[in-house]
Length: 298
Image (cartoon, rainbow, N blue to C red; front, top):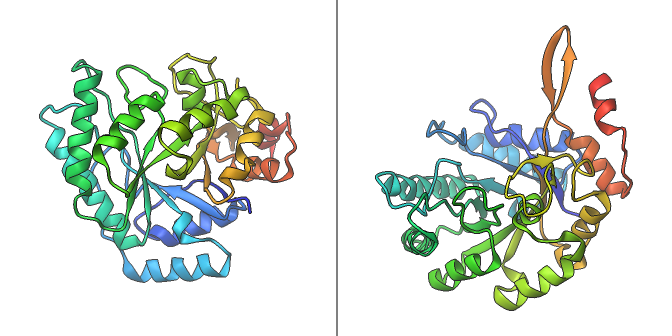
């Protein structure tokens, strides 16, 4: 069964219940959210009654909560042991606690940027931090996201991810593949089977817990990390469909993080989520080259 969804909002009024409602509006059977703004530490208290309502709505609509994903905030950086290092460790611990309270089993994490310390030092910092964070098992798995290699980002190669996973050596640590990031890091997704073979030999396919499905605005090996709508970038619709429907990924949630579409509404510029249209294309396996124009006029 295709497990497909997108990034959705999580606001203080409806929290998880609102996230479920938004996902259902896109025709999704999974979704991903931040438990608060990804750029700051502002967090509302978790409302347990809203969790119960959300759980009921998910059950009624065939959403497996075990396949729902939280994304860790961008402000966490485990690779640089500067004055914010302890903050990053403690804040991620808090996010994992929030996941556990919400009943979410997986949190996606950008491994971090070494910011001039060097790759090996940065990797060792990530390992040290993850050992500290994961020593108390809260039933939440951290999924390290494959990165584009922008600036001093780590996690841009299979070898870097392998180093982290092998040295942390915990079962509650896995990987989230991001198609845009893989492409921008230099992986030819037209030869995806070759990449998967290497990944399986070094890390293991069983470590993949989520796939971010994004097209890319830039060429291969650009190290830019700029997402494009499905089929409207340099990866292409057919290549992404082949990844989405790979039999090895049947039980893995696929999450869209594609750009919102901007249009004029009542003489004001507004943005609209394209996810329902993109999910429809994916389900039908048919590219609509006019999708963005249609979203702008409807």
